[in-house]
Amino acid sequence: MHQNQGGRVFGRHLDNYAEKALKDAKERRNGTIDEIGGKENVINDAVLTKDGWFKMDCPEKVLQYQQEIYEFLHQREQESQGLQLSINQRKINETMRNTTIRFVIKQAKLYNMKSETLFQTVDLIDQAIQHINPEADRLELIAITCLFIASKYEEIYPPPLGVLLRGTELRVREVIDMEKEILYKLNFNVISDNTLIWLQLIGELLGCNKRYLDLIKQRSMYLAELSLSSDRFLSIKKSTIALTIFLAVEIQFGYQKTQFQWDRLSQHSKPSKDSKSIKIICLLLKKLILI
Image 1 (tube, rainbow, N blue to C red):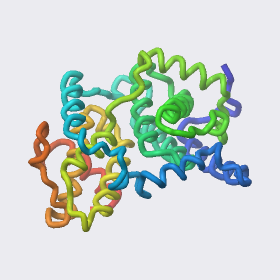
Image 2: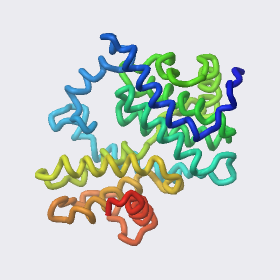
Image 3: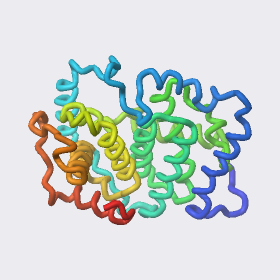
């Protein structure tokens, strides 16, 4: 195993790696954008809005199957009781996890990856933490490996591993070995019903005031990304997080602007304003002085 030189301290320099990778990528682009996902942007423009939501006339929304998909996912979530995760009794703490998630968010944006890739990567990281219980100095390796795995599933043109390793001291062999370990631990079940999947599905079923559609989607996506970096959401079902996000948007904008049709949800009811999840979101927003 490759030994890091200079005694790299976790958390102190991790955020800087993304900045270094960004600068390095810009210097290397010189017209060849395919290796960092540029070609896929042409495809995404045809089916996605700038905020990552499917365009209204996109067949991939499969409108005629939405209710069946919704009921199926709800049944599967009930059977599994949701994926209950926690960093309690683990070798890492909340600060270490949050630093890792921020690093992944920067990397995903750097390489023009889809929102699906980002949310799937974070879910893989949390599962890897549960099964492997890594030391703090292995979190960077786990983060890059999970991003690599998720990008191969979600991206049409995933960035090559060598590109993802720019700005880090990791070696390709280390990532390949970690990929094997994670896949074996998860029994190769790397696709989960993450928050984004529920957010998109429930959002379509709820409907909203078309006049404020873009504003509602932007704030919903912002809250969804915000939930990624807080370990307080780990023990909450993904469908509950999505429902809470829409409730928080309704509280902030008011019903006249949102006009969500909560009665359209056959398997869920409108969350309580006193629920645990809504209190967590309000707390996060207050920390950022947004409300």
